[in-house]
Amino acid sequence: MNQQEFHDLIYDMYYPDEARQGAARLRYAELDREERVSHLRKVLQTDMDGLIWRAVVLLLQDDPTRHLPSILPLFDSGLPAVRYVLSAIFGDGRLSVALPQLVRHAEADPDGRVRHAAIAALGRCGSVETIEVLGKLLDSDDDDGEGHKLSEVAKDAIAELKGRFGIE
Image (cartoon, rainbow, N blue to C red):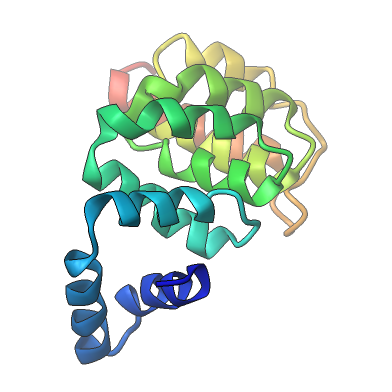
C-alpha cells in the first residue's frame, strides 16, 4: 500500500458512513503492524492536521509506551498543525506526560491556535501549579486567529482547574 492509499484508508476509518468506516477498519487491521506504524509515522511529517490527529491517536492506541518517545519531540515541529494537534490530544489527563510542552506552547507558541489548544489542555490536565502559569496569560491581548481571546481561554482553564482541585 502506498502512502496516499494509506491516507485515504485513515480518512475512511473516520468517515460518517458506517459501512465504509467498517470496511476501512478491517483493511487497517489486516495490515502488518510494522507497516501500519511506518505509514503512521510518515503521516506525522505532513501538515494535514486532520490526518495527523488520527495518526497520533492510532499510534497511542497501538502502544503509548513505544510511541511516546517519537511523538513528544513533535511538539517542537515547525508545522503549527502538528503542534496544535499534539496540544489538543495531550490535554487528556491520562497523558499529562506532555505538561512541560503544553506550558511552553501556552506561554509562547507563535501560532494562536496552538496557544489556544495548549491553554485549554492545561485546564484539563494541569496541576495546581499550572494555575499560576495560566494566571500570567490573563492580561494577554492576543487571540487565536479565530476570534477567541487567549485571556478568556486562560480564564476558563483556571476555572476548570480550580473546580477540579476544589479551590475557590
